[in-house]
Amino acid sequence: MARKRSSARIRQGQDLARKIYDRKIRELESLSEEEKGKLRREFPLLSQAEFDDVIRQTIEAKRYHQELVGWRAVPHDIAVLILVILTAIFDLRIGIIACIAALVFLESIFQFYFNRDLYRPLSTLVWLTYPAYLVFAYLLYREGFEVLWIAVGVILASIGTYILGGLARIPVRMILENRARGIQEAARIREEREKESGKAKKD
Image 1 (cartoon, rainbow, N blue to C red):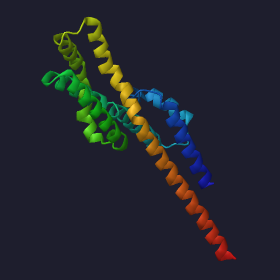
Image 2: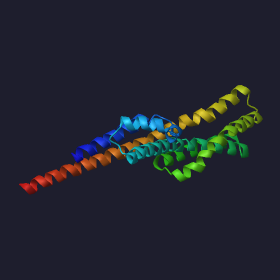
Image 3: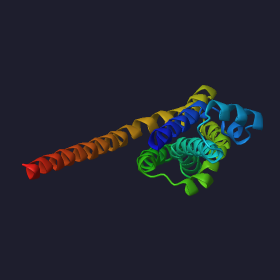
Image 4: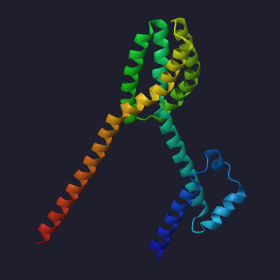
């Protein structure tokens, strides 16, 4: 009975997490007592501590996911800033080459590595990209480009780097997926060998 009740509480905790996951973080952080009471009545097996813990874990999971998505956008922001800075210092050709090289390199690293403490200062770079686009447009104007080509250049600097970043992530994603499949296959083979070894001992 105790095991069944524990399993039922776990299921209710999972159901509660699924029910509230689509809400925004600030909504979850400011749930009214009336809303909490309504949810408590819907999931009566959960204690107050368990109920609060599910909400806390859901908020943490949503915040982690948001930071992970933002982390994967950082290479784009850095690449755009490199493009603009090196175009201003040297020329457009060097800026484009350095931008592409940095984007491909950073995309591969940021797929493998995630640091929440490092993300927080890096996330502010996105606010620098907006004025960077204006500076880039001015640099293209100074180079003698017409308005149409300036617009194309800015669009490529913003949207084009996202597309290129997505393409650069494909090989890394394939490596990670193959690695995960390899780990699963190794675990399956090890489990089968352990079963065979157990049968041999019984025989």
